[in-house]
Image (cartoon, rainbow, N blue to C red; front, side, top):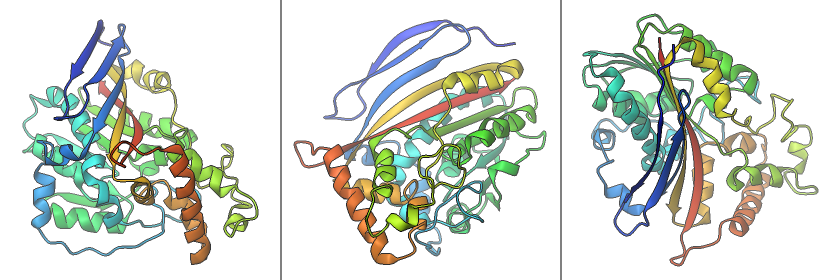
Length: 356
């Protein structure tokens, strides 16, 4: 049975000093709350209350190794076997990448208020930034973080030595019936579309009554930052062109291509959980990240979506030329602001479902 909720309102808030007010519109009727949010993220955010124990905990052991130019995948995509990726590269934008975690955890807290020691699984835990937020929000929790990147797990274990971190992938994850919360930040989108919702349904069905499945996924397939990866890859007669000749870039029927699948409509996620849910909450937030310049956008995506493209270019000079061409296209797509910085729009879809 779905809890009926009727609410229509506009919430306007001042996020940071000197940043224009952002309008958040949440319009939903009965079962399906879907919000559309635009959020400004600027350098002042780095000094805000959102800097928490994760950032302070980095004074712990800093040992970790870095493996470059290989894509992180939570399930096999274009490669024959999973490849590692760099925790160091990913954490260049740890503040911006962690902000959605706070937004999602803030919606979860009331559902776990009566659980003293919740059992939490953090899927695609990466270097431990999401796990740290969860442990801060639920101090008595027993948490297991899962990722398939050895480099990410090494960083997570050194940052949070008292938590449990295991290697695994989303396509085969099956929780026990002890889970109070299955959480995932920016990992589900690495699954191909035919796997994505069935995997989530399997997880949700395994939850006990009152258990929560909560996840956030980037929804940027059509954003210029990601569309230009495909456009540049398909440019003919370039040093990198031969490496994409058989990669089927943009062909949604080919699971081995480097680009990820578009994200399903919110209604698809709602329909997947509704029959066994007490409540399903869905919203979409577009974060407007203020970055130093266009090269900063390149550095951002080098830690995530650009990696599968770079992995297909084995020759170093050709790889450099591809990145240069991609950066040139980005400069046309992201005009400078008055102070020379750029705004990177980054939409993310959030889903929170509670088992009936």
